Each structure stands twice: as C-alpha cells, then as structure tokens.
Image 1 (cartoon, rainbow, N blue to C red):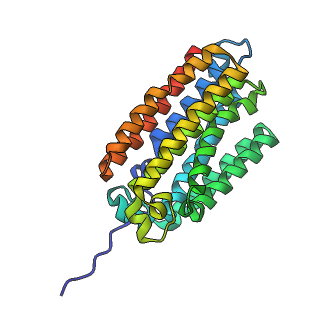
Image 2: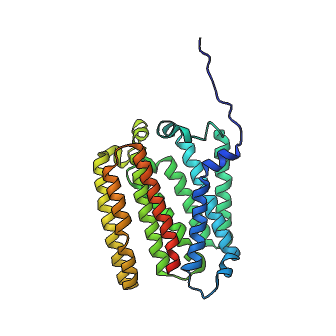
Image 3: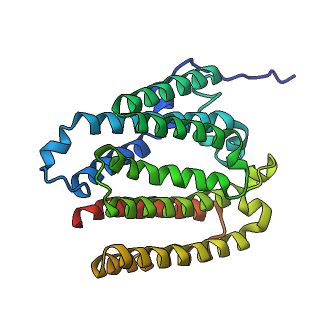
Length: 292
C-alpha cells in the first residue's frame, strides 16, 4: 500500500514570495518610471530633482505593490493550469498556503490604492481600476480570446503613462513609449498563450491558440506587428517629426527578428525564449529614452 503524501507548506516563504511577485519584473517597473521622469518629463529640472522626488518614489512604490498583488492573484487562480504548463514554478500550494496568498494580495493591493490616493484622486482611481482589472483578468478575462491579453498590455502601457499623470506635462513622447510598451506586451502575452496552450486547453481556456490553432495565431501576430509599426511611424511623423519617425522605423528590425523566430518556433522552449526576447526589446526601449 502506497501512503499518500502532502507537502509541508509553510505559511510564508520569503523565497516563494520573491518568486511569486516576480521581483525582476517589479524592478523593471521602477526603472521604467524613473527613466520616464528623468528623460521624458520636460520640466527643466536636473536628475537630482527626480531621484529625490518623494511623489515619484510613492508612485513607483504604489505601482510595484499593485503589480506584485496582480502576480499573486494570477498564480492563485492558475495553480491547476500551471501544474501542467510550468510545474517547477508553482508557488501557491507548495511554498505558500492559498489563504496566505489571498491575504497578501488584498493587503498589497490596498496599500497600492492608498498610496495612489495620497498622490492624487486621479492616480488613486487609476490604481483602483488597475487592481480591479488584474483580479478580473486572473479570474475570468485571461480565459477569453485576446481580451485578457489586451488588459495586461494596456496596464503595462499605463505604468509608463501614469508618470505623465503625476507631473501633468502632457508630453507626446511619454504617450509614444506607452504605446510601445502596450504593443510589445500584447505580442508577448499572445506568445505566452501559445507557450501555455496545453494547460489552457485542458482547463477550457478560450485563448487565441486554443480557439484558432497555433498557425493562425502566428499569422495574427504578423499582421498586428505590421499594423503597430505603421501606426507608430504615422503618429511619430504627424505629431513629432522626421527624427522620431526614423527611430520608429527602426522597430522593423526587432519585429522582423521576432517574426523570423516565431515562424521557426514549434516547441514550448522556443516560445519561452521568444517571450524573453520581447521583454529584452522592451528593456532596450526603456534605455532608449536617454536619446530623447
């Protein structure tokens, strides 16, 4: 007779908490918002002003809290799917009890909303909106074709644009980088759906690759990439000028590289690497802010 085995789950694990909140992704949010303030907010102030700006610090902290809470609630609802797609990365139920994960989500979300409200009612509302949609995404929207992908991508772009809300400069360059973050995040989210198609199909998630197959989903990504490139160049030429248009046209190289790798991809490992490429391109985009 084989005895049943239940893992000894601790109430709280620091390493598990770091993993479930995607520490490196949170760090990217901080760098993004500080780079946006340093290089795109045109206020005539020097770097020291932004590096010591208390409201910018609180904005970054509130964004980090909300993103961390979003990762927690996403993993909370996705335990069964993740046990198929990526069992080695499952935290809830292994390194952290489910009730601890839920309490952590509620507390951290609340802190993010409160900090946003202290900055301004508008930012408080945006943070409340983000928390609500992250919960709705984890519970329902991610199981719908494209809707969940769009929500995550929109919130990624919002993490850039909210810096402009804080400083009130109405800088077109901040909007341009927000659109850039949105677009590459959308591409990455769809690629992740292809990577996770096995688990998603098992539990009835109606993502694009589950509904239409991998090949048609790839074709949709090619079309979206072309439309994104054309749209960025058009907006750059219309509202800024030739220099930004040339910069945007340079996106043909990373997009072409992704399209090339996507066409050849046919394993989970390939799609995982493509997801990492998209994140790397987004990081390069952040660092390119220094030129503006």
